[in-house]
Amino acid sequence: MGRARTLQEIRVLRFEALLDRHERGELSQGEAAELLGMSERTFRRHRDRYREDGVEGLRDRRLGKPSSRRAAVAEIQRMLGLYREEYGDFTVKHFHEQLVKRHDYKLGYTVTRLALHAAGLVRPAPRRSTHRKKRPRRPLPGMMLHQDASRFAWLPGEARQYDLVVTLDDATSEIYSAILVAEEGTGSTFRALAEVIAAKGLFCALYTDRGSHYFHTPEAGGQVSSRHLTQVGRALAQLGIKHIAAYSPEARGRSERVFRTLQDRLPKEMRLAGIATLEAANRWLATHYIAAHNARFAVPAEQAGTAFTPDAKGLAREVLTIQEERRVGNDNTVKWRRLVLQIPPSPLRPHFVRASVRVQEYPDGAIALFHGPHRLADYDAAGRLLASPLSAPPKPLRRRNGCGQASGLPTAPTTAEAVI
Image 1 (tube, rainbow, N blue to C red):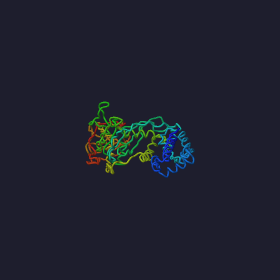
Image 2: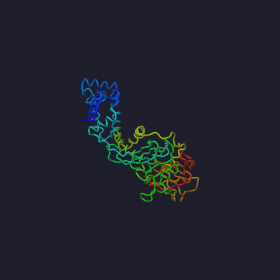
Image 3: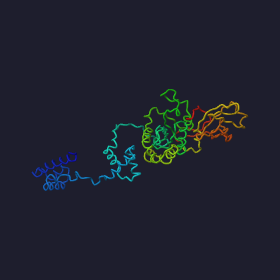
């Protein structure tokens, strides 16, 4: 016997016992009705139905009948067919979103989930512990950003794995940049940071893992070096951005959870959008997916306002470059990545033989040579001389950003690091 029928039988037994006491004069109508949890009028209606039809008059006539709000069988079957044929690898939530978006589906998420469970197409999720303790979010956007990468077979139908470099805000979980590359490194980090700074401005802190392009770690698994900076560490220090190292995957929980969602959804969304190449994927991420993802998963910040500071003078372009020191040869040339850069004549000095110069390589492959604050020459990616401006780059801007940190453009070179 089902739960509803068992409860119905108990109610009948209680009503018969209290009706008998009422008819023997032990209880008034009001007292009997109160014990049954009903009004006197309802008690009289039940009494009259019991006298006319006996026990059958007390039974709930809705039992055994389909609900008027029951989902149409044909619609349920259509949904199950779509899941079997097109969406078998989707989670229930993602599947329901696509049904509403693409198939004019009107039924709710819970009905869909229960129907999939009943059909054996989806297993109910195991219950997880309810006791969790999360690190509080930063109250303002721009106070701390997370950057991490996940290696995965992102492109649909392709077994090759790529790195997806994601930069998101701690306060809102809003993704500001998502870039697919063959392998993460200094170049992909600079590209992502440049996108964020151009769109939002300079921020306060960046939270990353201890990858070799982020930090130098003298001992495996040990503390990162605060003195020996990588190219990324040098650039962040110049921009006045605090660099925070994570020492475990759990410490990067915010970005780890985002990547679980992206690994589940992104390849399927790209398959539906017909994305097949790395270039098309990056265009689609920037123009379509990021905005849709943020609308679905970003949360409001705890406080109104922002900690971003606009990069009004474009300092980031000069800072987010590979910068290394080189010694000038006897023929006034500098060797750089199998290229020979010829220094043109300069009014600064008769020659630069044995002088130390700074080479800056930009994300597009362009190269510039500096001697102290003076820009000696510009070259294209093939090492061909473009110009000899003999002008200094923008002077360091000593400012206090929204994070209370000083930043500026340095003139001293730092430790070299190979482009990855």
